[in-house]
Every structure is written in C-alpha cells, then in structure tokens.
Length: 201
Length: 208
Length: 206
Image (tube, rainbow over all chains, first blue to last red; front, side, top):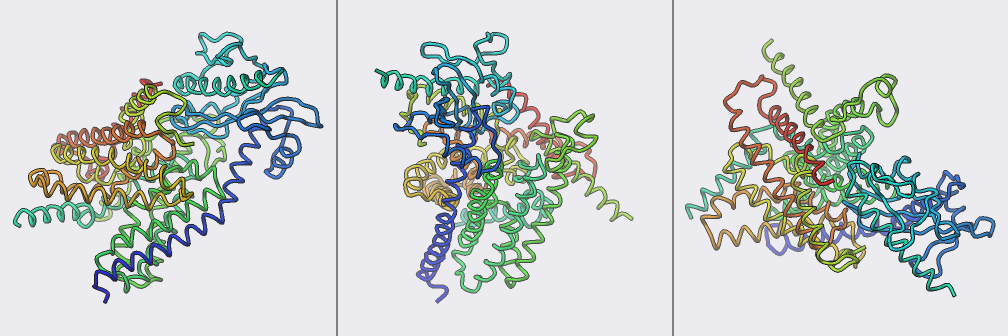
C-alpha cells in the first residue's frame, strides 16, 4: 500500500494539512503580540519627537501615549499631543519608500504648524553605516527647532557644503537615502498642511 | 535513450562532487550563508541555536516518519518538515524579539536551504531512529556553531571593539577598528584563515 | 503597503527605480559577494569558465522568472489571506515547480540545450540565492516593476561572480598554494578579494 501512487498523494496532503494547521494556530496566537510590538514602536516614536517626554518601559510608553495623545479624527491626519489637556503639538506619522526598503517614522510639529519639535524613525533598512545612520542622533537631532519653508518643499536636506541654516545636512555617502527621505517627508507634510488649511475657516 | 543515461550520469557526478566526494566542501558550504550574520556575536548565537534546534527536530521528525513516507515523496517531505520548524522559529522571533528578527532578515528563512540540515536528514535520519537522529542533528549544528561563533568573535572584537555588545577594555578605546571586519570581505578572510590554521594542524598531525 | 505599479510615483520613476535596483544588485549589493547567498554551487561548480557561464545563465533566467512569480503569489494570494508566514513553503514550491517545468520543456524542445544547460537545473532548486533574492524582495516591499529589475540584476551579479571565480581558479590551478589553503581555503580568499573589489563600487550609486 505504501507504494501506491494514491497513498503518496494522500500522505503529502495529510502531512501538509497537519503542518499548516499547527502553523496557522501559532501565527494566530502570536498575532496579537506582533501587532502590539508594532504599536509600541509607533507610540515610542510619537513620544520621542517631543523632547520633554522621557519614558523607558513598554508599559510606560503605552500608558503615557493613551493619556496624552488624541487619535486623529480623519485617517492620515496627525495625532494631537495634549499633556495635561493643553494642545502642545502634533505627531504626524510618515511612511514611504527609502532607497532600499520602506522608511517609517513620526515627525513632531509645533502648534504654529511651522516648527519641528523632533523626528524619529522606527523602521528602516538602509545601507548599514551609510543610509542607516539616519537613526543616529547627529542626524535626527538637526530636525529639532527647524522651521518649515513655505511652498511644496517644507524640508530641505542638502549636502553639508551647500546647506544653509534652515536646511538639514545630509549624510555623506548616503545621497540616495537622503533624497528619498526628503521626498517622503515633504509629501507627508504638504498633504497634511493642505488638509489643515482646507479644514480651517 | 542513450542521451538520457549519459545526462543522468553527469548529473550524478555533479551531485557526488557536491556531497559525497568532498566532505570538506560540504562542511564549508553549510557555514557560508550564515556568514552574513557573523559581524556580531549575539546575532550569530541566535542563528546557531535556531540552526541546531531546527536540524535536531527535523532529523528526529524525518526519522520518526521514515517508515510511513513513500519513496517518491521523500525529498518533498524532508523539505516540508524543515520548513515547518523554520517557520515556527521565524514566527516566535517576530513576536518575542522583533529587533533580532529584523537584524537577521531573510537568513532565518534560508536555514531551509542550508546544506547542513538537508545533509544530516539525508545522511543520518533516513536510516536511524528518532532519538539518535535528534542527537546527531543537534551536535552537528553545535559543531558548526563553534566555528561560526569564533568567526563572529574575531569580527566583532576587531571590527567594533565590543563582544556581544559589551565594550572591551583595550579594543573599544585604543584599538583602531578594522572596518573590513564589519564588511562582507572580512568574513571570507577570517573563515579562510581559520580553515588554513585547522587544516595545517591536521596535516602536521598526520605527518607526525 | 502594496506598492503596485501605479502608486504615488509615475511608471517612469518606477522604471528608473528598477534600473537603479538592478545596477545595485549587480555591483554594490551583489547577492553572492555581499550577502553570501548561493555559495554551494559557487564553490563546487566554478572550476571551468564554460560550466560557470552555463550555470550562470540558467540562474539569471530562473531568478528573474521566480522573483516575479513569487511577487504575484505573495502580494495577490498570501497577504490578502493573512498567511504571510506561509511564504517559505509557497516560495520553495513555486521555485521547484518552475524549475521542473523548465527542465521538462527544454528536454522536449531542445535536447542540445538540455545537454549543456539542463543538468544544472536540479542544482538551482536548492540554490539559496534564488530563495534569498525572493525573500529580500518581500522584506524590501518592492513593486512589480522593480522586482523584475532586482531579480535580473541579482542573477547577473551572481553570474558575474561565478564566471570571474572560474576564470581565476583556472589560472591558479597552476600555481603553488600552501597545503592548508588548497581547495576551499584559496577559493574563500579569492571570494574575499572579489568582495573587496566590489565594495569599491559602493560610491557609484550613492
């Protein structure tokens, strides 16, 4: 019976079915944990763009986030940061194609719609040692305090030799990453600003 | 008909060259795709433990099922079982250690095509009982782990001055870090040197 | 985030991205010299330039086709069904089935081609480079057009590495090598030097 062709097919089928069931079960069991990991990464990013907030553990991050951040009423809008009930800024999530893989993060914008309070990247897979250095303090700390330009290019990332006071200095050797980062940040910010202006009376 | 037979023989010769006649090659090949994560010790340790466990469990399962498995689907069943355990490792890493999962990238999944796992299943598990197969798989995996950990230690200490993330006294301060150790060529060179040392010792031993 | 051909950018910029990715996959992020994938066939088959070219050509073809097929399988089947973890099994099945199909077709329509190329196809099925390229394509969330560029570039990059290695080894066969290094040792050193040479390309794109 072992040699019959039908047995082989049935055997493969049964084995595959058992393996699949076990795997799907495990995947569903851990789904909640995976989603919560991603959520915590995002919440940590949202907190990180407002320099006055200092938290460590995941539980603290979640507690502070749910207390102080109001979810946007319209999807694609920013999260409102309201510590002690007062509006102190906006946390705008952004996502887009970097040079190698998607870059995801949060940019903090002040109540005047013009000042950047900070920026944080919670997902990137750029070239290690080059583009991946966007997560190092020397790069992302430049954003804090800068103001948006008017028009379609609120953020400008320029080569260190050409950068003015208002620009962000790019990372040497990571031109493509910086070019795409500038594009995706500007897309996110201009879209948000247009929505805000349309909503205002 | 004649052409068919000749082709099969050439096929067989190539496969023999890969597996049976070249034991040294076979050992190196299994290490190769894991070299990519050897630029630090922590990642390597996680990879090695995953590889050893997958090998051990797959061998045990293949051995347990060998009475039932029809000859025609033997290879497919092997791949399916190996893939099953690798997916479990992948799911667990993604849920409970997402940073590590992201650092290791596709290399966890590539354990499926790793020559060591398939080699042990083919060579040992197909003709032995589950418990010995488990042990054989486990210790084969651990054997390669030792080599990989040595490579990782050399690369991390010389390239970044740390060991498993902890800065070392001389290496993180005064040592001029060898960037080449962090890059892919460094892995090739360290492995080649290690191989040279081991084989030279082996040859001297034989001569003495 | 499914990046279909008509996302925020136009098709023109997608094609440009595909060209850049192809170039990068050949030189700066060579799938063999930077990511260590596909070493098995690399070390054992790369003794003669002719066999290396044959194997390389087969890999280029299989890699381009399977990355595209697997892109479709992943984004159009697995993701909507929420079965992403299944990708390893599905990808291997698709790769093996595709290689089997090609082998049968070549055997039927061109016995001459089968004699020279067909014997490599079973080797390709377990080649980690193919599965690796597919997994990178998934991790980096490439769109379909960019996947074509990436698959083709990875294959060509692998082929270049293996042909170069075969050429070098044919020369080295006549030199004196220390006993401990003979065989895999010297092959690894050659691979290391090649990898070093390719690192020099990093500045070209960035």
